[in-house]
Length: 212
Image (cartoon, rainbow, N blue to C red; front, side):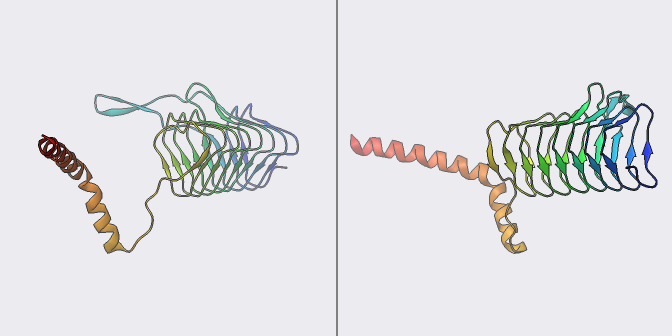
């Protein structure tokens, strides 16, 4: 079922019983399997953010891969999935993506992973199966996330997650004055650590002298 205003590029393939709601853009050579759903405004197969800096000017790198989507995948309104630069961007079977999600080029999302609204995944990230991502979680590029990893809302994943489990990486909400005090303490942690180490050395020296 193809809704009003949809665009389907040349050599694209859409599996049986897949529905495109109004105004979906499905670019050339991209693929989606059976029983999929693409909600209004979804854009599949746009160029990834690929540029090389040459002499201070950014030169576009051709994005020649595809987006390949499995069976039973649901993609929310205004979600965008970039095509790969060389290899394909892969969305495996049963993945569920909420509205306004960005999936960068060359990402690989494992089967039955679910992402809530406004999640952002940078290019070449590899995400395992049966993972969940709360709203507005972010994943940096080229990272690996293990199967059955669960990322809390608003968290920033800046390193690979190699074991299953629940992960949280955001600073709790506080009154502004309290937050500023905490931020000041965090900025001074390095110098505080050095002072504590110096005190520990002094205590050890004094302890040894007392023992003599």
